[in-house]
Each structure stands twice: as C-alpha cells, then as structure tokens.
Image (cartoon, rainbow over all chains, first blue to last red):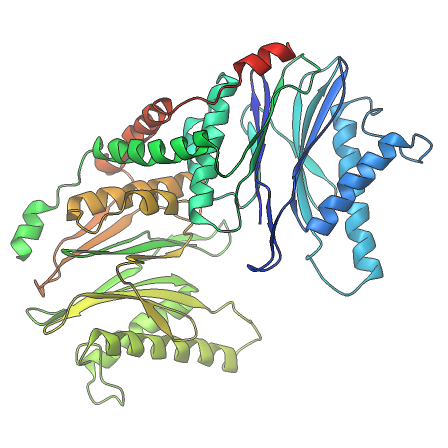
Amino acid sequence: MTYCVGLRLRDGLVFMADTRTNAGIDNISVFQKLHTWAIEGERVVTVMTSGNLATTQAVISLLDERMKAPSERSPGLLEAPSMFQVARMVGETLREVIAENKAGGQEAQNRFNATLIVGGQIRGSQPRLFMVYPEGNFVEAGDDTPFFQIGETKYGRPIIVRAYRPDMSFEEAARLLLVSFDSTIKANLSVGPPIDLQVYEKDSFHVGVVRRFEANDPLLAEISKSWGEALSLALESLPLPALSDEVLEAG
Amino acid sequence: MTYCVGLRLRDGLVFMADTRTNAGIDNISVFQKLHTWAIEGERVVTVMTSGNLATTQAVISLLDERMKAPSERSPGLLEAPSMFQVARMVGETLREVIAENKAGGQEAQNRFNATLIVGGQIRGSQPRLFMVYPEGNFVEAGDDTPFFQIGETKYGRPIIVRAYRPDMSFEEAARLLLVSFDSTIKANLSVGPPIDLQVYEKDSFHVGVVRRFEANDPLLAEISKSWGEALSLALESLPLPALSDEVLEAG
C-alpha cells in the first residue's frame, strides 16, 4: 500500500508521500512515489503515485522519456499549455500502461491499477491540483475539496478534515501532514518512512522545499511522541459522559 | 457499513455500536446492532453485529429463539457453561445462517457475510471478549490486543491505539469511544447515530449502563465541537518542521 496527500493552500501546494511498497508482507521495499519536473521560472509539475508499482514506474518513465524526446507523438509535460492538459497527459499515459498490461499478459482484472495525484503551476495561471483515476479521467481540487489522498487514506483522514485551513503556513501544513502520516504508520504496516515532502510556493515557478524524513529523523520521533501526549491531554479536556450513578446502581 | 467497538478494561467491558445500515446510499435505516442477554446475578452476554443485515438479524433471532425453546437441539446462550462455549455457539449459528443463504439462493460469494463481537461474563470466570468471523471461528482479546473493532474500523482506530489504557474508568472509555465514533462519522456517511453504549462492570452479573446517544444528544455535539478545538490546540503544541529558509530561498 501507500499513503500520499496533496494539499491546496492559499499560498501554494504541499505534497507528502511515503515510500514503502510491498508485494506481500515479506517483500517490502523503498521506492520514491513523489516526482517533480520543472522549467525554472516557468512551470513546476509534481506527480505522486499509488497502486501497482510496475504500472506507476512505467507511467513515470514514459512521462520522463517523452519530455526528453520531443519527436515523440505526444508532447511532453513540459510543453503542455496548461495544468489541465498536464493532467490529461498523465491520465492518458496511465490508461495506456494499464491497457497494455491487460492486453498483452495474463488476465489480472484490476491488479495493474494505479491512482495518481498531479499538481503544479504553469506561468499565466493559478496552481492546480488533480486526482487521476486508473481510467485516465480526473477531478480537480477546489475550495470545497481542497486536498486529495491516495492509498491507505482512512487512518489519517480525520485529522486533516478537522485541522486543515486554506491559510495555513507551509510549516503548519507539513506538521499536519506529518501527524496524519504518523497516525497511518502507527495503524498500518503497509505505510512507512522515509516520508517525502515537497512544498510549492505559489508564483515561485521554482521546485521549492524538498525534504525527506528518514525513519530515524528526530522530528518524526518528536512529533509522534508529542502527538500521543497532546492527544491524551485533548481527550482529558472533553466532558465525561455521566454514567456513574447507573454503574453504582449496577454494583 | 457499521462501526462497533468492544473494549476490555481492568474493571469490565465497554461496548459501543452505531445503528446505521445501508443498502446503497438511498436506502439508509436505523437498526440496533448491540444485543444483550442476561440471567441477573449469573451471566451477561453482549453481541454486536456488522455485515449483511439479513444475516445478522437471522443470527440474533436464532440465538434468541433457542434460548427460549430449551427443547431445541443446541442449548441456548444462557445455558452454555463458559464464554468460550458462548462464542462457539454464536460462531456456529453465524456459519449456519451464511451457509443456508448460500446453498438455497443465488450465487452471492461473500455478500451474506458478517462479523460479530461477543463479550460478557459467566459466574465462576473472568469477563471475556471475542471477535467471531464469518467462518464461525473466533479470536479472543488479551492484554496485548485489548479491543476489537468491526465494520468501518480505520478512521476511528488511531485515537484508540493512542489513548486506550486498561485502567481507564468506564466514563473515560465511553468518552474515548465517542471520540472514535465522531471521527468515523465525520469521515464516512455509512456510519451514523444513534450510538448505543453498554457498560458491563466486572463481577456485577448485571446488565449495567445501557445508553443511547441520539443524533441531537447535547453531549455528542459538545464532544464533537470540543474535540475539534482540542485537536487544533494539540497540533499547535507540536514542533514545526523548519522549512522557512528553504522556502525563502525559493522566492
């Protein structure tokens, strides 16, 4: 499994992805799931991947190759006129890879599927964030749905739903996502560090902060520990249901 | 879907279940999923159900009927000599119902499946808590795994993993579970109030506190609101990742 989140903030975009892949529980590896391409001063495009690793690696490799070989039929991500066209291109590449594997090889139903998050900005328009489905179609984040999660999304969702604000600073957003990842990692073996972070600052047209949190990163440990303590305090601040009389009655 | 949790505490057992069932999103109903039988002063048995509603209702009805008709081949829950035998009886009834539907009707693979939580105490032994699988077999909670969840379990799991303590009071446990339910309800439409709570106090051999929290219960609203605020404060107490220099650099 995998866990990736893309957040749309007033000041830009924040991406976070784990790096664990597993084919069964005895075949666990580290693969990067966060990929960024940029033309400094003109565009930055980030893609995060979840799903079948062969599929997502093929998609990333194809996107990469087509950028470098402009003679290819389809223009590369770095030539697309808009983020909408970038998302379309990524969706088409994804559909193409899935269809190829289905046609050529063994019957495998949905097993080659993958879902992607695509975000970035091209000079002349706003930053945009998309979620691309295995069928190649996609949806865009807006004010009402300002973030996308892919992979093992449930454990880490409640805290984002509660604490996300569009005017968060990048640091606050990174902290929120680290907490969301910590909750997921604590509950599910298929998501694990290192955790990759990328921050894109609106109108910078520059790759911005790229940071990898290794398993032994002191900040990860600190956040995990402090969060446990802070949650206990938070719980204690809530009202207790009144059960005592009835329980005494039962004694 | 459904969300039910059974907690094993030093002082007894706490059960909580939602009441929403849905067959598609336009067919939502309220059904009780928490059922208790008791012989005052001798035994208390609680069963919570998730999965196919026809299956779980048939299981509960069969268990009920067999208790009242002692001439039936299999002795009822109220005659079983131990909680282990109670869990076996529940498991057999569940397997029987699933098998009947499979054999008689249309092909439906796993669609008649259900998973149950069974807990209680019989005079002469300790309180025990089990999770019963569709195959009829079951596992028991112990010191290392002191709680079971069934249904839509992921959203509400991180807070229980973090905050559960075996020496919690019943009030603290009920509050923890209400928070876990609130996180789930906020994230997933298939889980909803009213929420049923039952507390069994060790060695009381008495049904104890039974309480239903309706959707408009002021405590539910208060816990939901306070939890949102407390979480934000908890987040703010954590260290921020240092990104600012790099972000400035990017500007």
